Image (cartoon, rainbow, N blue to C red; front, side, top):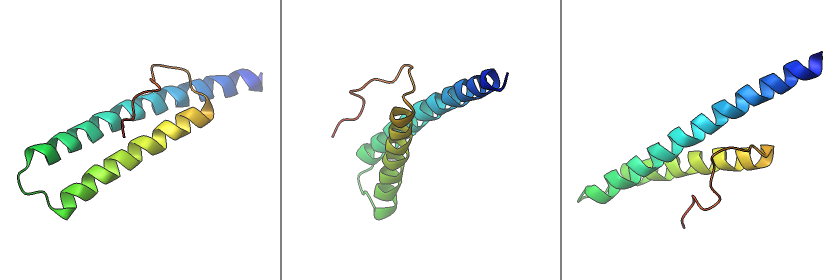
Length: 79
């Protein structure tokens, strides 16, 4: 009885995690494009890009740790 509820809860949180990963990836891409489009890049803009990347990588590692199966690609992070 309790096991089914736990699995349902885990599944719903995994879906939320995947949605957060998608949003973080979009935010990171937008921050990179903004930095590329701006002529005079300041420290605040670089910090924003760095923060967006850190958020994305943190969520990606969490999904990998939880072994979430979904639409995550292994080659998403380009260094």
